[in-house]
Amino acid sequence: MRNNTIVYHVATNHRAANSNTLRLERRFGFSQGARESGFTLIELLVVIAIIAILIALLVPAVQSSRESAARIQATHNLQQLGTAFDGFHAQNGQYPQTWAAFADWCDRNQDE
Image (cartoon, rainbow, N blue to C red):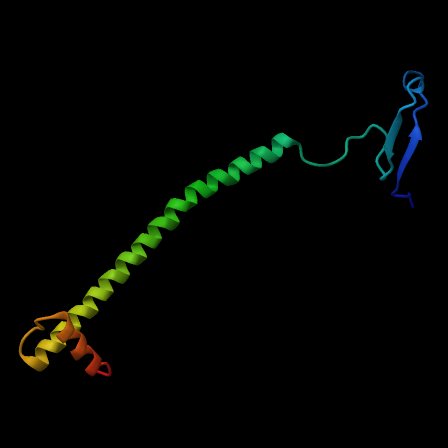
């Protein structure tokens, strides 16, 4: 089993030996000179751009469905208001003259 540690040692080749620089050597089971696995910056930017395009396509669809739901809810509210006006007319023989009279009638007839 290989040791997964990071080893620091002084470079021994003839160019780096004069400057006494430290070289970092990783020992994770890779052969020397092999490229470590991972994503490049360009690959990550391409993935982010694709995700941004998909979100840009999805947002209008979600917004239109919200607008459609709000329109349907407003239609149902108007239908309920019309039904309430018809109920007021059925009981009183006329439509309400003021909102206050209609609100009082609605408060008295909530259970119906």
